[in-house]
Image 1 (tube, helix red, strand yellow):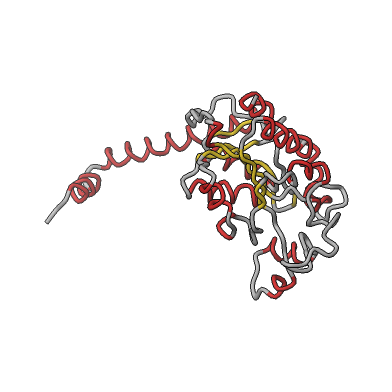
Image 2 (tube, rainbow, N blue to C red; image 1 turned 90 degrees about the vertical axis):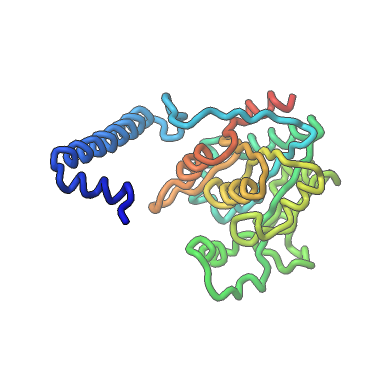
Length: 275
């Protein structure tokens, strides 16, 4: 029995000119894509985070319905966002460059002014978490430097002002009795906490996503929320990431935000939508 694929294979085996033509066409297509990517990279060399002048992906058509929208902020904590935090040596440049601390506060203020749901998904490690039998590279590092450490799930001794605590300027928004503070996520994504449940119970299916850090918890929350059926817009200047010899975490995340999120907005754009 011979299918169309078999006929095509035999035709190309006995027709060298056709085979060369197909090969040339494929090569030309690959070369064209490579040239386009290279040209775009060259145009963006001055600012690697600049939006592409000629994007290949279709534009966003996400429109907010504030009655079913929430602002979700991941890890708005001292260890990520304050010069005294344990990660500042590798993340401080990105936080400063994108005005991240101020932009997150602007989003909190705008969301409260618009009376939409606000949720915070924090990252905590308890002593029992340090007994894990295996870890990824960054998990090892976070545990080694005591990042987000608390004395226990039922113990807040030493929490105030620690690296696991929220940034001081955010507390008036987070501790107002209205903001949802979820159970902690333990690696990067919200599949290990109750964020999706809390949002669903509040009638939310659109999320404005911000927080730390871009290519870790923020991106992982984006992915999980998308998989859970939420419409997600990421606020690209209300996040940041580490710059290491292994790569620029913010640039990696920005690429994936553009590929996967329903929208990628700036803080100013979100404020206008909420105003």
